[in-house]
Length: 178
Image (cartoon, rainbow, N blue to C red; front, side, top):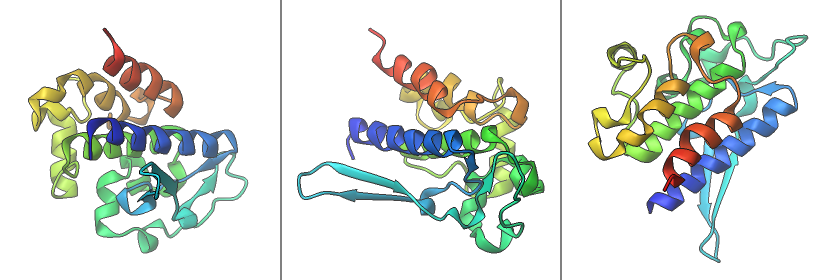
């Protein structure tokens, strides 16, 4: 995929997650397996989110499924926020932002955030800001370090709280700066 196509996929994911959040829904299990990308006959990319079995309402009047571990596959956990892994009921909008940040890492580096959950957590703690820095594996992506790191900080209260705002300011503006 070309860089612009990768950016389009990320923007489509962000728009879908932002729509869910405005409707009061948290996905809680965003990973490559929950993103369907298809090239249309016209050549355009179509992006859809699915696998909402683990979603819940923001207001928590209904907890959604409590057995996220049963529905999440091993690879999914690399994209789940630390608080979702420890207790899915602790999920907030920032939890989905974490997952979107991990998906951004994958889209731009071409690699999973780490080979294992233990290594992902070590990588999160290794960066100066906390969070994933794509320049650790692709020095040419240093411009995205701050943004992806801001989305993937281990502490949910230190992350971006609005996925659309995060994308506009920390990704799109950075990439389109003169």
